[in-house]
Image (cartoon, rainbow, N blue to C red; front, side, top):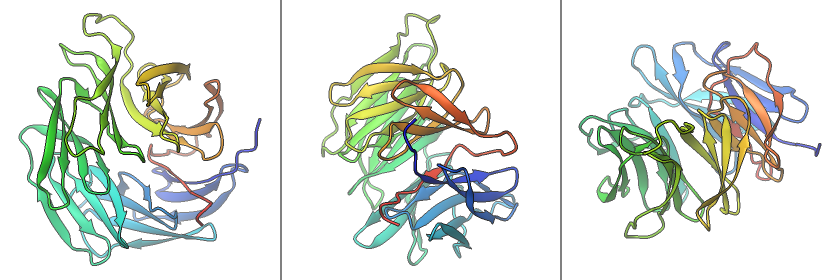
Length: 325
């Protein structure tokens, strides 16, 4: 097996700690405990992997963001001096030497948090009977995917909170991921009248066009295999998306240029998120069901290793870009 040299930060909910792990040796390089009254909801690295931001939910409804500084593969933790809205969804944007976090509450209320002066700006009001299932940012827009009784909606906001465009999706979106070239990947699951699939939007365009849709389950075939596509990992060249299909314990390999499924990798266990390891054919998968990590060879879909059961890992992890640290 080829050498796999990488470092990652994971969150252990059992010990209430963050671990910086050498993936090649499994050595814990740094470990930080965090206050037990906070539950992390995500972890997002800045561009040079020097800082990780961890939004958390507080037991006393005082939600905060941890700032994890990373130097020489050691971590230090600071709690930003503000309380934030409930961070159901979280996205980071870095532009013109300014960093901002975007937070969506479960009801769709959208906020911008200036990570320099800690000002919080409310950008969008809550929507009626919706749930925000994902956020993504580009150079000039914030994209949000909403689930509601009629299916779902993709909404694009500018940085002042004005709606740039909306597009209704008949099925239920489960996530939203943006590629470096500006394509939006929205996996969706079925309703009583629609099937499962993947919608690919050309988000870089000023005017939204109908997406390219890849159907996974036909609505007229209710007994067909259920996939529940829920997460996407994009290769650095933006040519391939690996779509996690949680219910079918598999990964769908999508050619983003052609808009077709090239392959289906049967993993044999439920996974929830996928993180590619740079310059290798391997990825780390996390699981809501098992609270563990597994190493997958994407060349053949082989599960090559699984973490021990003495840890309870959250599904959000961060793989460091070692070329910048």
